[in-house]
Amino acid sequence: QVQLVESGGGLVQAGGSLRLSCAASGRAFRSYNMGWVRQAPGKEREFVAAIRWSGDTSYADSIKGRFTISRDNAKNTVYLQMNSLKPEDTGVYYCNADPPGEIRLWGQGTQVTVSS
Image 1 (cartoon, rainbow, N blue to C red):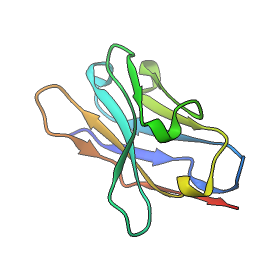
Image 2 (cartoon, rainbow, N blue to C red):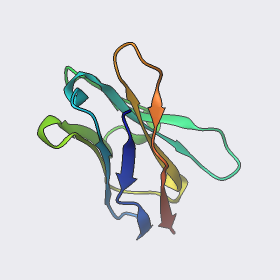
Image 3 (cartoon, one colour):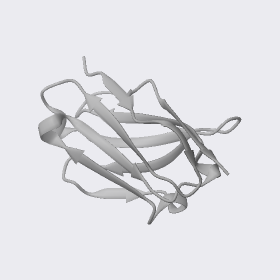
Image 4 (cartoon, helix red, strand yellow):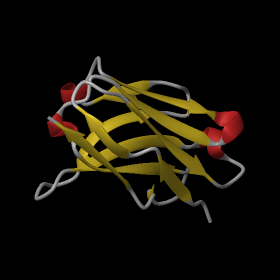
C-alpha cells in the first residue's frame, strides 16, 4: 500500500521560505497525480496546489506566484516551495496522492507556522 510521509514544516517569520517534501512509497509514483492541501485552525481544508503525472500544475489563487509545486519521480517525492510566506499561510499541510484506479491517499500532515 502506498504511504506518504511529509516533512519540512516549521516556524518561519513572515516573508520567509520553507520547502515541504512528500515522499511516497510504491513503484508507480510517476503515474500518480499529487497535491497539497492545508487546514488552518478552525477552518476547513483548502486546496493549495496539484501536479499531474504529466507535470501539469494548478494553484489556488491565494498562493499563486509565491508557491511552486514540483516532483522528482526518481525520488518518489513531491515538493512545495513556499516563498514570501504570510501569517495566513499558517496551518497543517497535507500531501495527497491519486494512484490510478484507487482512492485518494493522505499523509499525516506537517505544521507550518508563520509569525508576523
